[in-house]
Length: 254
Picture 1 (tube, rainbow, N blue to C red):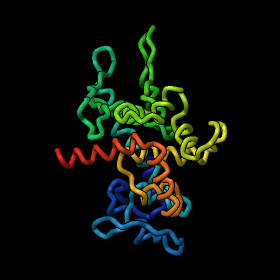
Picture 2: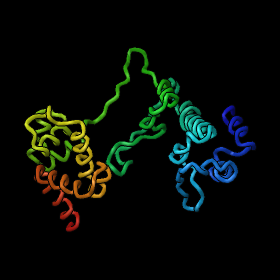
Picture 3: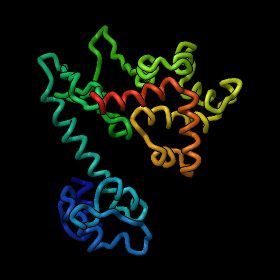
Picture 4: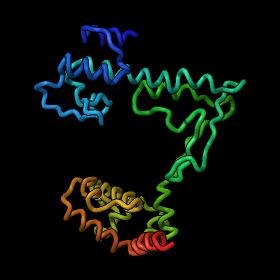
């Protein structure tokens, strides 16, 4: 309520912060906060200037009202999604029991609901405070687990690619190992952070059909350079290359 009041005072009128249309009118038509700033704001499908978080963040330094609106939205999201909802989902022992769904996500990953505890905020200090609601019962411990490069491990197993399997069997950092083989270096120590970053981009992208154009954008290089990188990857990991090619052929045929 305080943030709302401060926003109204800055705007010189009362308006519904949660209504994108009203917010757009106040910011762009009445206050004209982007005028002369050189900031380009995207339009919505209806042609109005967007008030999405990503667009507001561009204007955070232009006027203090923008910071207030972003703050208001964060509180609203935390209240409506977690603080008001989580207590309604607990059992008699104040515990939540989310339902895990094996076939809920198109990517094949697990999803969960009532509540979805896979998206508890972590980016902001305020959001991280929600995690304090989850406490292990006496004598027990909460454990966080994550697959380690699972897609690449599966790709190595299914394709039988000798080089990829060699990296995993030696217990090497997968992105460093790929970079070393692509750049034909003598040891892992010679791999620079930049080389590893490039290898990581192509490692995950290649499995999901990333093309040369997307790779160039991801690496921030010209298309010709990305093309060379792409070909080098395929020639280094020929087993994986053959497997991915056959996947497409079989999918079309069968």
